[in-house]
Image (cartoon, rainbow, N blue to C red; front, side, top):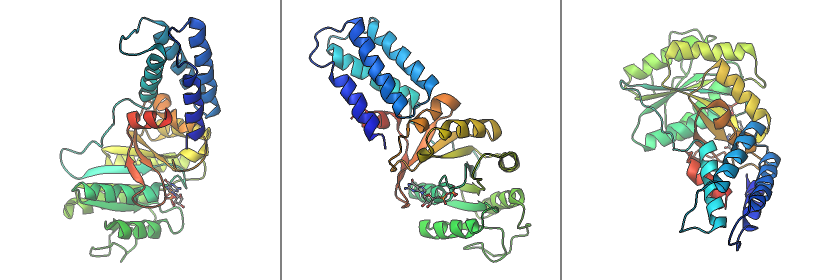
Length: 308
Ligand code: GDP
């Protein structure tokens, strides 16, 4: 992903090399090319506007450095603005003062929530945590079992609503199998009892946004007071990424974003707009189907990757 954006941006900036001095029209021409590159990559229009305005203002302003030639100066500005729209600093998970830390996952069906639950739990276990997964996607047939398989691969126990399916535990959990809110609450209570320090709650997704999905997610949120609500966003869905993120920001009020399928070949710019549009940080990136294809999202590294 981002290869074409990367080529276009580096191409636009390359044209400036060797110029001893940049006129305002050199800057305008470069800004125009950058603007088109961002728009063609599906970066959202308001984000592009702000980005370009900032780059132009800074490039034409008095940001003069003796150490850098004018072309390098613009590359530096573009890089910094890119890091800015991607969130600036790397944002780490906020751990609860009193364990367990509760992390809830939300997003559309197929976004990669269940896969992410496995990746995140394995990653946390690698950091010395003792996570437990809670299966609250009771909508999609097979979702609970899928989480159990993922949990098994990650070596992390899964709390599930049906009697006898609580891996590594006593089995029967006295909750109605049809009520995801009750399952979530029972799961958090179970984690406390078993002294797991992190609980990851997988929730149901729908193929599109709907009121019931939002209500269920916000009910689970209210019932479990999560420390983090992670909105899982498939970077392959293109421009729908922005409207989906906005709907979830209003409906569930997430605290962070996980971008998935960054290994895909879609343009991906819409996903890059999500931090600017929602004000919530991108915290993790998923880059494949395997449990290891996952990392903390670093805005500076992503910007460097895009700028080649
Ligand atoms: P959920 O419905 O949100 O729980 O989504 P799933 O976790 O079931 O994922 C949907 C599909 O996307 C599965 O086939 C996953 O293997 C796949 N998937 C998840 N994350 C990634 C990723 O980062 N890259 C790729 N290529 N596929 C992914």
